[in-house]
Length: 333
Image (cartoon, rainbow, N blue to C red; front, side):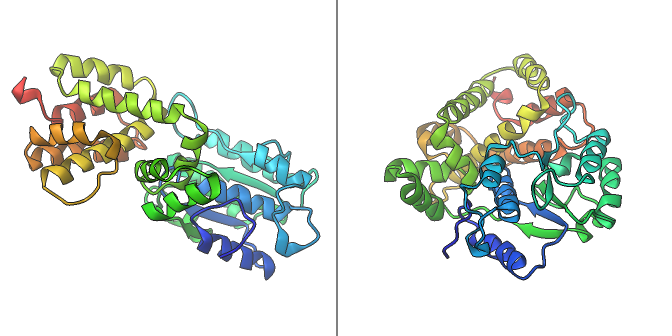
């Protein structure tokens, strides 16, 4: 499917939004859901470009070269608004929601529409979500609200019902590999590795090409996990204390550990599948060889439950300590 949008792996979503634009059926609120780094914000920005592109040919929007397209791509357009999470709690506070909705009510400075992108809207508590309802019910004619979230579970039904939901799915390994080869000229072996490490997240794979520190941080996080399994309870609790100081950093860390434990479980069960973390096959096989499948499953479940509970008002240090007690190794120490 051919289009000019800077979006890869989600052609159906692009086509859906293009048809809405062509038919004059743009909604005032969209809810884009999907895994972290799957491309939600990339799609939201591309939609904002298409809405405000200055190209006279509507079918060619977004052109990517006009003032509006360039400013939106750089994050500097005066009519683009972005919500920010509270750095201390990792939540989207009610004050932030109110600040963005008050600004979206103003007339555009230079664009057709003012567009507000609410990142990580699942981290908004019910009261903060309620603060958005009035704007959703009576949106200004020039306003477009785009909410981003990994899923709808933590969102109020009233928020969901007043938004056009677009669900982005993880892309197959082959799709991401081909995109990296064709669009970014990545060598096939490296493209295949990044595609598998991405977990179906096109955005992560794209960023990993431009930012080598992503792979370095990943390697450090997995080495931390390997080292942690050799520690006693006191050593694990020290790491829990350190990790609990940065809640926002825990989301990508636990997602990575979750994928690692999934690989360990598959190997322990003898599954004939290529692990997502294929560059660490030797370490995965060593670990799987020391465990019963039940132990790997318990660690996977503990990691998943802790990750899912990050959006609640939990004691981070205690939650991590409990998770580490479910990780294997203590009984052999």
